[in-house]
Amino acid sequence: MVGKWHLGFCKWECTPTFRGFDTYYGYYNADEDYYSKITDKGIDFRINTTVGKEAVGNYSAYQYATRAEEIIKSHDPDTPLFLYLPFQNVHEPLEVPDQYLKLYPNISDENRRNLSGMF
Image 1 (cartoon, helix red, strand yellow):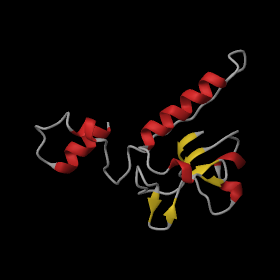
Image 2: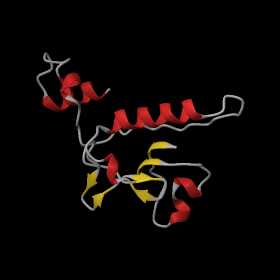
Image 3: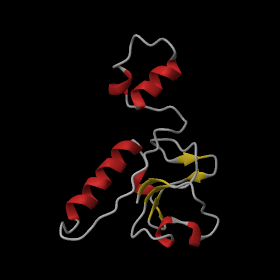
């Protein structure tokens, strides 16, 4: 599994690798910064069950897409693959790389412009 997990993390048994997924790469909370992976409680990014500090500094949508590609490329094509990839982009904060923000100069509302760039 790659991306956001919103089905509980109060104990390990509620997290993705204990709920049937072979691997996990993503976050548990909401309102996580897309680059720093920080919430009001600290870094919220996991690689399986380990805090993934190496993910800090990169835009999450790019990271999730790259990780999904790695999983697909390394998977044996003769066996089935289920890959669940819920992107973070439906959540606040509204953060977008500049290259996508610049695509919408005609949108005057900053929040709407950011959201347009995210999708």
